[in-house]
Length: 356
Ligand SMILES: *Cc1c(COP(=O)(O)O)cnc(C)c1O
Image (cartoon, rainbow, N blue to C red; front, side):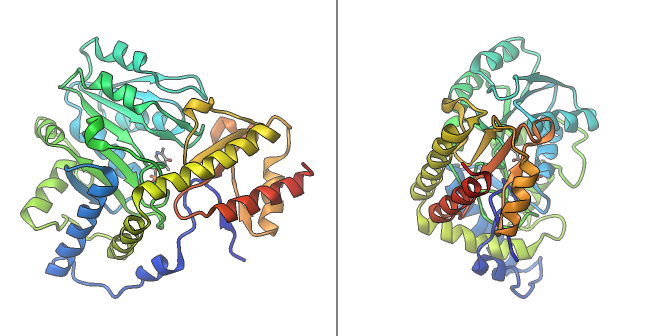
């Protein structure tokens, strides 16, 4: 039996989108491949609210995160972490010999504009990474306020991890002044994992030109230069299966309407937050609560693993807490093409299992 997924990636993928992955292959050096990739970039620019170039990578989101910090840090990176995925960005810097400092918030707390100001005002850093939506804690950082601080430092490249939020909530990349905005397919965009996407500003391009060793597969400047030279074709063979499905799914997303899609995510978030507050507690403070997933504090001391086992028998799956938050929290994703009706059935099933 297929379990309906309420985990923050991979998400359930609509049958018609899955079928698009079975489209017969085309040559990756053909005009058709160029047209397909250009079409995806044009549509992604709308979803991201940007005029910057879009880069596609056949990898999950982590690939472009590693590529961004390595390709564009000239002096030193300031990595702001509110959980597992911010920490991972710091590990990527260390593994690539990229000078970096990490600025951690307490678990469940956001990155504040004050923290960013304090770090950037030292003049030590020329790249900053922010997690927009931390999938372990269910925190959505105050990105507008952070962006305002970053905008005072024109030499700093602004990298934003929107892996678990792009397509589920409005992220106005150009208005925020984000230079590299990264996402991947298996979360709010509603596709299988395997493709990642980023925007790439002119400022980021110029920064990368000053970095001598950018790696190879995730050299963002090389990806950029290749698609300019070869009419949107990439240096190596891309996952055309993902491209067919993404191009199609982006049509569906734009047909739903971005504002409608964001509103649907928020409506679902409100229902889960109210439910969490009624029966448990939320890890995030209300003002920083994510619109795409909710991390619930296990105040009743239930066995999350057992709950998930029971849910599995009924055809559902949620997520245990991440890392040190395992069993202390559980997570319910409300992203991509999830419908309110299905979410409500899930919450009823949990109540039934736990006798709430
Ligand atoms: C899932 C996730 C990642 C990692 O992305 P992959 O596509 O699995 O490599 C990074 N950051 C956040 C916030 C995520 O939710």
